[in-house]
Amino acid sequence: WSPCKDHVTVRCTGYQTLVILGFAVMACILISAVCSLAVVCLVASDVSIKASNKKKKAKKEAAMFNTMIAAIVAFVLSSGGLCAYMFAGASVFAGFQDSSYYPFQAAYIGCYICGTMVGFQFVGMFFAIYRIYGPKPSTSKDDDEDDNNMMMMGGGGGMPPPMMGGPMMGPPMMSGPPMGQRAF
Image (cartoon, rainbow, N blue to C red; front, side):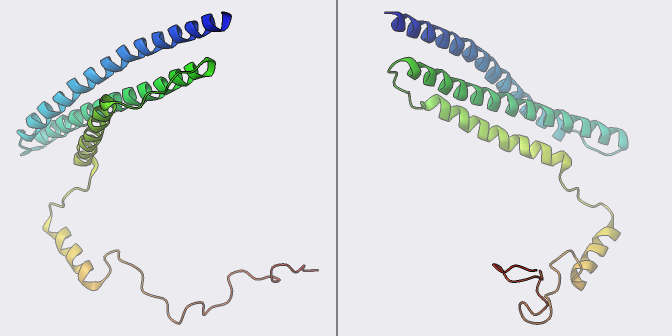
């Protein structure tokens, strides 16, 4: 009778943990959804800003930075919530199996939907970061001409020229006695 009471106590504690974690994860995912909608609105607003002078250019960069932050927050909250629930759930159910027979549930459709959402948010976060920190197009004509000339001459950062001679034509890389012999 005592082991049965102990198992019921473990199950009640485990279910309490899952309920609290479930509400926390639900809050994280809702905040993540709000941030995802904010990303869409922020992208629409920063696309409409024309960077004609320095003041407007700074305003556009600030708007792009805010978009990036919202995308990062959306991804971190949703992926963190998904991972926390998956790992904590697996831990709680494994704890149930320690004291008695408890079948382990397979992942249901909600986990796959959340995983797909996290994947889409990762792509959005990647492009939001790339917009700010990716390679910038050159604006001066001299830079373009220099790049074209370097590419025509073969000095544009390609592979080094091949080595002369056949393979392994030089002295051995390491000198010493052959393997298995002692050098006294």
